[in-house]
Amino acid sequence: MTTADGAPAVPIADLFIDGKWCEGATGERFPVTDPSDGTTVAEFAVASDADCDAALEAAASAFPAWSATSPRARSEVLRRAFEILTAEADILAEIIVRENGKAWSDARAEATYATEFFRWFAEEAVRVPGEYRLSPAADKRIIVTHQPIGVSVLITPWNFPAAMATRKLAPALAAGCTTVLKPARETPLTAAYIVDAIARAGVPAGVVNLVTPKASGPAVTRMLAHPAVRKLSFTGSTEVGRTLLKQAADRVVSTSMELGGNAPLIVLPGADLDMAVEGAYIAKMRNGGSACTSANRFYVHDSLHDDFVEKLGNRLAAVVVGSGLDPANEVGALVSLYERDKVAELVDTAVGEGARVAVGGTKSETGAFYAPTLLTDVRHGSTINRSEIFGPVSAIVRFTEVDEAVSLANDSEAGLMAYVFGEEGQSIRLAQRLNAGMVAVNRGVVSDPAAPFGGTKQSGLGREGSSEGILEFLETQYIAVDA
Ligand code: NAD
Image (cartoon, rainbow, N blue to C red):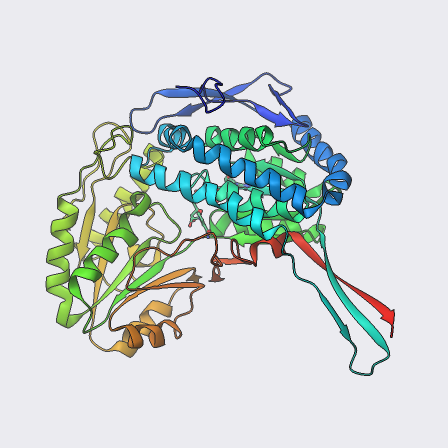
């Protein structure tokens, strides 16, 4: 297999610093594993403290020139990255499958979704808003403009290794910022492929850097203390996000935080049952359940409960699970045996707390697979109901009053995503009562580069995508001029 311009499609497994691929200063490497069979996909370079410093300094040196390029020039680099990755979407999807384990259809959808952020922010780069107006006292003109914030550290998780990287890189570059990307240790190959595509699109040396330290905690603490860093954009767990917010406070580094979810999915009386079952299936099983937006807590009205359980159960029981390299498999592996065992433990705990396994409930002998699972008789407030499952497990709670469903849904410290199935007008009115940054009405997926993605409460701060995403990388500047 070769790339569109003829380069061999061997995964890149090096650091990218100041426009060059390089081994880390120590020459050390760590294995990247295929979770479906435990084989080593590549040995990736470890970034030492010196490598992380070099990446930050390259980003700092590149900032004055990159921030001074025209918005059109930055837009065109992003557009070329969009075109390169569109042509190479199958290669990108294969890398995602190899190191993350997800199903081919999920990986291919992610490749497209990830690439769209380059197109979207190529279009946003030339549309940064500003203001020019007379003050109320007519003593001056108020000019409001935006400046790129500066060197940005971008930290991404393993569950969407391509899309979480492009959702940060594209707006940062569009805004005129320079970047150091630190991907998850499980999925650095996808990040490296994307960085290479941006380099091939013509981004100048130092504007995009990639580092993979051995231990993220100490390395990121050190990076945030570096005087060049002005921005931290993080996607990952609430626990790590909270730690990073405290660390960012020391130098008052601007932060954007996309953190964990625990999405409720409400099926109202009067919902179209088939639509609810299909939507619930997608909301749960997209990405094998390893999505921050995954439906986690199902609240189903008494009048539809038994039929919903039966239909969703039949759908889940028929799912074909297996390696993502075979497109016939609908659900792939979890990212690691550790994640698989965490899901298994949550199901065991749920059963201990009174839940009943209607479908699934088993883990694979080999490979990080967990069977699509349906739990009934789950109690609101039980361990599984309070946890972000991050696997293919649907946990059903029955309700009788609509107001009760709203308060159960809102009874969580997470506020990223919610789903409502029911008559459209009633569902939209109910959506407005939910404490969630995003609500899907009668559909199982919301993600779109053109829409604001982000959470309330402990699910995060700030928004990615849409016209808001670029503002996360810009500072507002007010200039006063005599009237
Ligand atoms: P994680 O928090 O363990 O790791 C995320 C990133 O932070 C990785 O790059 C990791 O190496 C790094 N990291 C880990 N410990 C760190 C530390 N002490 N200091 C600095 N960096 C550290 O999360 P994960 O397990 O990779 O991803 C799953 C989580 O991400 C879930 O909670 C999920 O909901 C969340 N997520 C949120 C969104 C969103 O947009 N809100 C999107 C995807 C995933």
